[in-house]
Amino acid sequence: MVLGILAVVVILGLFIMGVYNSLVTLGVRIKEAWSQIDVQLKRRTDLIPNLVETVKGYASHEKEVFEKVTQARAALMSASSPKEAGEADQMLGGALKNLFAVAEAYPELKAQASFGELQKELADTEDKVAYSRQFYNSVVRQYNEKIAVFPNNVVAGFFKFQPQEFFEVQEAERENVEVKF
Image (cartoon, rainbow, N blue to C red; front, side):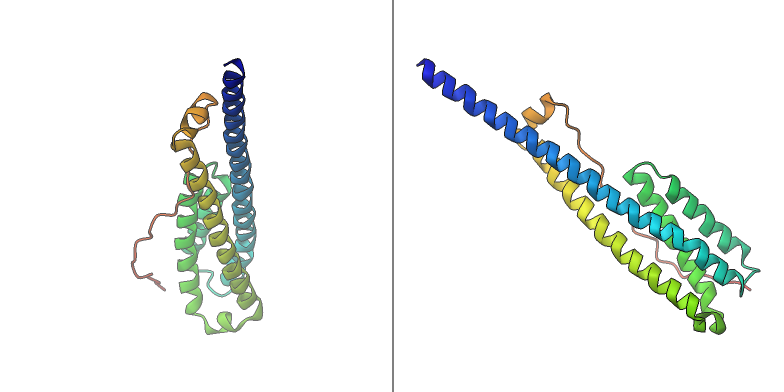
């Protein structure tokens, strides 16, 4: 009888330890995944001033477009949560679309090698941001599922594990970019 109770306590202890360790591991993976998003967003924000300066040389009268890109870049750099980063990322994406629309009006700019290289690097970085965001959201989903299902939710609640936020970008409104000269 005592041996049976001891076996149940040991099994229960091993179960709790296993759930706790898996939640801690997923928490570390979430931090790693967020770090990868942060690295790619930083890389993109580092490319943007060069891009803006290149376009400014050809379209210096497009002050409003440059200001919006600068504001969006600053918002992204100061974002402190996945939700804020998602909103700032969306704002920056819209501002960059406007910047590229302005650039389309200048064939000599489009033909410039440095502008083409910056566009290529930015597109590559956008792909890396998308992949990093997908990986982060996948790990957050695993973690949130794990703390929500029974009996893991009992262990998660006892140790105060909280659901994590997804990195979401709102569906951008589909409207034509208007370029005025």
